[in-house]
Image 1: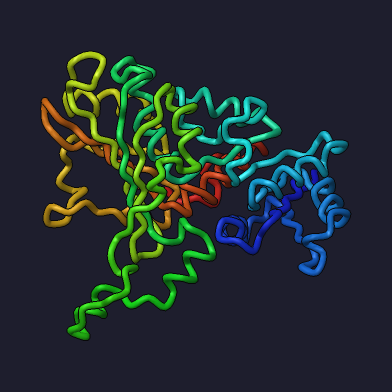
Image 2: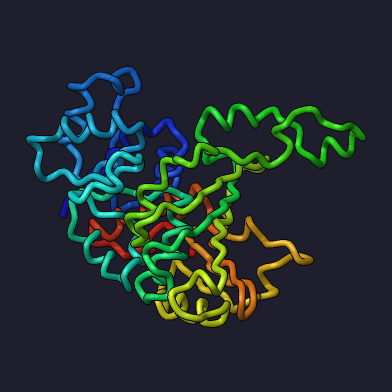
Length: 330
């Protein structure tokens, strides 16, 4: 039996490079590559796409749509799109297998078109979707969300901007007051129209957009997506223990989503949340902090793992009939 042929279209970007890293050494796949001189040649790209069984699209939105159109007469090709182009398109399946008590997993397995989730949206949807489905959060609840992320989430441009930036520790050691604002965490997308918002609403079941504030900080990877849930905002009275119980039930038995105990001290380092503890894995950890009146759900994940390339490989494994966890770390 021949091995599935895999093509990563856009392998020069962060997500494409990380997908290739996860596929390296896989003897059950035939990973094909285009001549770098031809990567922008439509005819050469079409030949590569149509010659593959599954294509990862690690491209800007317009280029992803173009790639799909190039394969219009190649009906057997399957796509996993890492861009935002198709995440709310009903013709595409949203690539988060743990949703809907695994029903999403079956849809991904049978699909030829899978849209890989955004990193912020992954944490938000894993935290909120079960609470909406359980009736604890009404669809029209005006939620807020703050997400702290390493700068790799901004792609090559932001990575380059931070690459020569002195760390806060180096600045302190030099006994200087740095005038480079990149040293401090920086909120962005303050027009409140971040590109992940449409999928955050569509997938979680909300009918009102959350007030979403992402924050980039001076470290490479890892994120903490924080969703406050005051008791008075909920559809029926519940505090931190009840919220955690709903999440634990929703993800019971999942390999890549772990729900910690309420106020779990193991998630803290001298009172500070351990934001980087999922780095290098394909795992998302959910922890509920708070009390009977106020709670916050914190979703921790590697923005380049479960938030991007790891999730894409997880979906590929499902679509091709491999064990879901192959080449992934939980």
